[in-house]
Image (cartoon, rainbow, N blue to C red; front, side):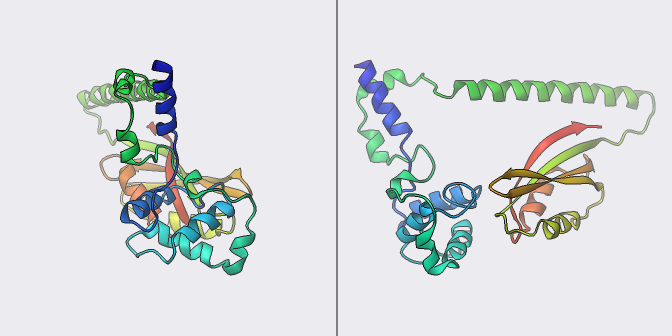
Length: 245
């Protein structure tokens, strides 16, 4: 029936887990997850980290950079890792949603194909489309303004004001050194501005820092590449705001 098909789809789509962590596919999934997370759950070590750590059996290969970083960090607790807070659950209870194995998905009833047009996250897509529409509209207005100035013979140097969110690994990260390392990034057309620390939760703060760039010389890809390369302090970087000047 349609209802049973719907229930089955929810079961498959919302299933979690990294898969077999002794396989390449499982390690790739875990590495992608840890690219944006310091721990398996939350912002501090928990039983979730203990369970996944035990499932790895041994230290991962160096090519799984994010897993290797996390593994060393958890291993530094030694026996204390078994005293992490929280309740231990099965391995497949942790990780990203949508981790169902291909074989399970292939076993879905043929009737499931009839409901492929159901979008559980349609609202998110619509929000993204609306934001993209506004962005393109502002860019068009900016280009028109720049063209008008050029027609008058004015020299136009396109600039942007960018607000960045720089996130540390945990509450023990030295934020002063992290900001110092960020400001040490230099490039023609890049000027660093004001900054502040913003609470994230669990005692962790992120660095919010402003910069002005010349569009033809410095792009967001350059900033992200340079900042995320500060691996000792930086977990990730996001663009909080982007405005043309």
